[in-house]
Length: 265
Ligand SMILES: Nc1ncnc2c1ncn2[C@@H]1O[C@H](COP(=O)(O)OP(=O)(O)OP(=O)(O)O)[C@@H](O)[C@H]1O
Ligand SMILES: [Mg+2]
Image (cartoon, rainbow, N blue to C red; front, side, top):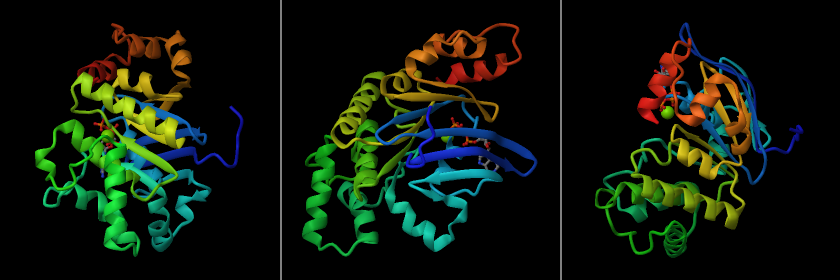
């Protein structure tokens, strides 16, 4: 694909080690404006680690991560702090604060980052909640919401500062298949309405194939395949073919990796 300097996300030769242990061993991908890029792979392969690098929470051991034109390792803490509101992050485990109402959770970035008056904050929170199908829930506590509603509330909070790019970590994990499909539909609706650019990390294959414009498969610290959903479905190479068809191949070196994958997928 053509290299465009204006691409909102560019990851080049990204390497991350924890101590002696190499987790990412040279990951390259780029995401175009308005594109949903899905990063898939077995549990523990380093998907969340990639996202932590993309929001500047983790400095890579080597390589470069450029988001919205900024090479993140060149930024100091103040510059990173100013950069972060431009990206919307949906964390793997929802991360709503249980002691606050849904409305206060969604309002939090506005209160921390802007001087908007309370009436405007309230209006924006109501708008964002209605965009994710949660009208009328702003006074409820997170514990009163279903799993799917909590994910939607997390999405409303990620959207509240109108970020230019989104990073979602396992947005459908813990949801039943119907609720997961509904969440995916919401993501597609928002993409249609807002031209949302997103990197979505998941090991939910159904979800990945529903929402991706392009997808990458991460195994053993490297992207072993990348393409549109149709291209990935047509890959003949053993590991990827097994993956798409959910059939572990017996007697292969990667058997254990895939066996773990199928447990979680
Ligand atoms: N702070 C840390 N220190 C040491 N090892 C870590 C740290 N964070 C993650 N790891 C290890 O790095 C590997 C990749 O972790 P990561 O959370 O990125 O995987 P993942 O693909 O998101 O997994 P999952 O699908 O379970 O969410 C794991 O083996 C994990 O144990
Ligand atoms: Mg993870």
